[in-house]
Amino acid sequence: MDLVEANDVMLAYEVFEARTPRRAPPLVLMRGLGTQMIQWHAGLIESFTAQGMDVVIFDNRDVGRSTKLDAAGIPDFSALGAAAAAGTMFPVPYTLDDMARDVVGLMDGLDIAEANFLGISMGGMVAQHLGFSYPARFAHIVCVMSSSGGPDVPQPDSSNLQMPDIDDRAALVDYLVASLKQYMGPGFPWREADCLHMAERIADRGYYPPGIARQYAAIMADGSRVGRLQNIALPFFVIHGDHDTLLPPACGEDIVRHVPGAQWLLVNGMGHDMGPGIEAVITPNLCRFFGLDGVSA
View 1 (tube, rainbow, N blue to C red):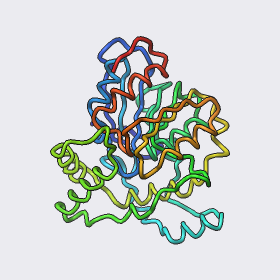
View 2 (spheres, rainbow, N blue to C red):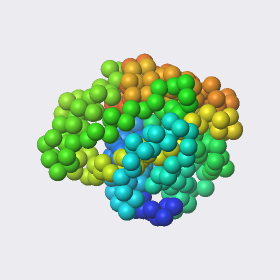
View 3 (cartoon, rainbow, N blue to C red):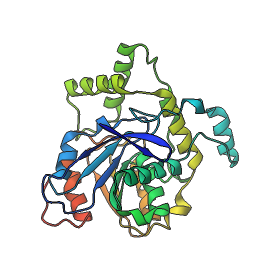
């Protein structure tokens, strides 16, 4: 793991080099709300490097080993919700566009002029921002298990922010195991031992509830992106799981309706998680999308 300064924060990152001659721009992977870069499955990363792509993973601001914005405090969600319902503006510690600029800053710090990008959940929301605000820096954008934030789709549930005392490690690990199991899909399940091991790594490395709250505030403040999605002119691919209970497939379908020419893939057995074995489905489809012919997972 290394650190790079990006958009006035320090981001922890790791680069996995292509195992074959480079055939495409680097692929930058961005995770969702409160999750850490260690939660990317090695098999998925290796499936991309095997096809000639360098892969960059990183911790979002306010999570893992990246900068924590303690001075920003904890958002007042009651006030934020009331303002959102009234259609008024409300201040948040940072925005999804700030997080999009983090990605661009990460690329600048790594001397990456152009990349392919894949974001999941909140990272998929940032993917939308990159598409309509920073198109010159990306060749292709992939938005996985995410949402447009539009008025006609299910909204994230803030009850997911009810978290345990992080000082009670046993209770925290139990909570994380339950969360991992809750969102996995039946087609790509975790083994029990792997689930426990990952929960322990998350707990010990950088699980950070105040940062999760601030990230969620950024999602709330962004509202609907429907009116902005029509400005995306990049190749754009939307992927969703048919067993996603946090953001149901209707959320992904709504993105496809509003991004001109967007491609769509509904993955059978996938939940709100890119579990072990997902590379067998995801990687061949993405390599074709990236223009890499004759690929296999």
